[in-house]
Length: 90
Image 1 (cartoon, rainbow, N blue to C red):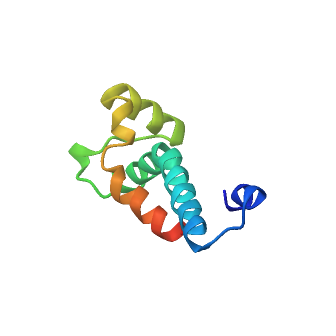
Image 2: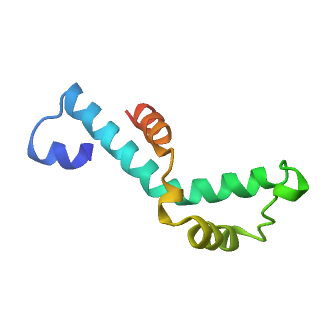
């Protein structure tokens, strides 16, 4: 984003900050489904045996979350993740 802004005008600290915030937010939002899937797979073994989902891999985890909980499950609670990425990206 910063380079695109620089093509049209000189970049100041505020435009660089805006570019960093927006690129961090978009990157985090786009990666939310993968992040949710990987965290669920990682944490599955720490659950009691009767509560485990027994995912067999990333594709299995992704498809089961989508089928059993719906598309919105990938973005539930994503605000802190996106906000953190905005801070890191700026």
